[in-house]
Image 1 (cartoon, rainbow, N blue to C red):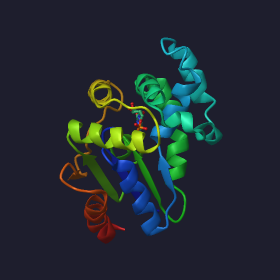
Image 2: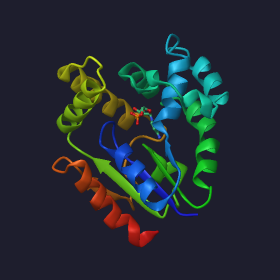
Image 3: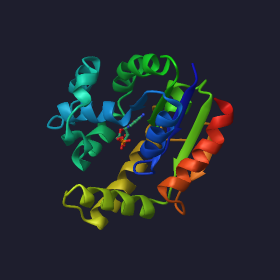
Length: 204
Ligand code: C5P
């Protein structure tokens, strides 16, 4: 079954692109960040205890990914911490692979879909934008949802998260060698989707 892997840093627009590609091709979509957010949320008061995070990941169930609290910056920070634990990543691997194997195809977005989860994916996109542009987008998105947000705090948080996600030893954030790089700093959402579709369509 065709798989579309969409990777990139936080707030790069990869989620929106993945969702729109999924709708276009009629494939289910998995936001894999939600898996790590769900596990991080369960252990948010015990983030220094890797055993708690591993146990939560081993007990992972898709029902854990429901709830608005998972969209908060607190959940994102917790996810970024627990996602560096190799056993947590290993515990979440089978769920992601079986999602990717379903008919008629699937779209997964995350950090390591093209490199680790689905290295054989038919389409791999690596979506980026400058950290300032990403902070601006996230800030606007939070405000639009009525959440309090301070641009400088979002920027500092993204810089921190980029560093943690890129420097970790297991499945760090990096483009697969055969990924199509999509730099969206100068694009709006429609332009980014059009560029992603132009690349994906002939490969599906
Ligand atoms: O994409 P999102 O911001 O929801 O991801 C939250 C955190 O989960 C990331 O900062 C990253 O540390 C982790 N993550 C990951 N691998 C993925 C998806 C997310 O390590 N495939």
